[in-house]
Image 1: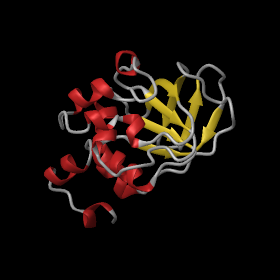
Image 2: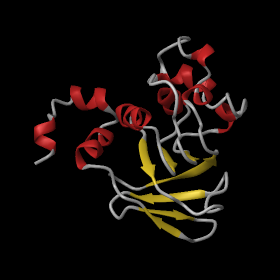
Image 3: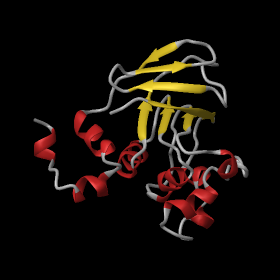
Amino acid sequence: MKENSGRCWVFGDDISTDTILPSKWKTASFEPSELGKHAMTGIDEQFPNKAVDGDIIVGGLNFGCGSSREQAPLALVGCGIKVIIAKSIARIFFRNCVNVGIYPIEIDYPEGFFMSSDRLDIDYATGTIKNERTGKTLTFRSIPPFLVSILEVGGLKAFLLSGKRYEDVIR
């Protein structure tokens, strides 16, 4: 994967799928652009107006806990979120992120390392995140290559439509 650079938005621990996309909006549409109008409004009503394409969400522990519905990460896609960095990400949410094209990074970062509006440079090849404000860098463990191949084409649907097979990617 190529490098990613973007502004980050910092949230705390236990950000549930109902916080990411309040349940009253979960069936409003299945289009990311429509769902994106309500992303993170469970914690910040103005988030959809502030987020831009390429932005990054930083969470604490247990990001994406709650229900397994795919609309929550789809709403983030609709806001332009490309990466989620968190101390831990709920398992189903982690995989749903990959399925819709969001790169999930789990890393135990030091308190205060990220502040909202920091610009981050992520190098997937070296597994590093650089905070431009501080100049400091963290190292993260990359996700498995077969998940990267799904992300490289924009998610699971695009991967399946590409004709690629799991067997081809793990070799």
